[in-house]
Amino acid sequence: MNKIPFSEFVAEKGQTEAGRLLGASQGAICKALKQEREIYVTVNDDGSFSAEELRPFPAQKRDPDLNTETGEAAA
Image 1 (tube, rainbow, N blue to C red):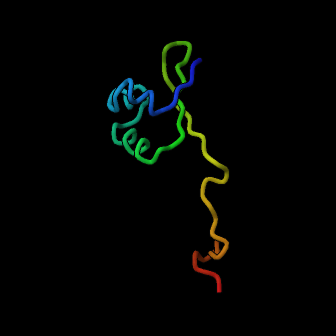
Image 2 (cartoon, rainbow, N blue to C red; image 1 turned 90 degrees about the vertical axis):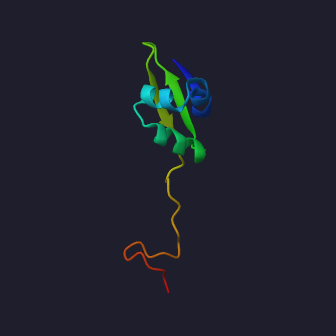
């Protein structure tokens, strides 16, 4: 198995083909590139491709001034 950065994979294959190979739309590929998401594509032993994204945990930053129950700013 060989992992390559998403942007290199798309540059080599093109957005439409990359989407087809990964089971995603061309629009999803374009959006991921624009957002500079940290995605790596794996070339599997059988020649197929899969992708995984590295994200920090938790993925969304929490606002300490936001009441999580009501969604309103704390007083």
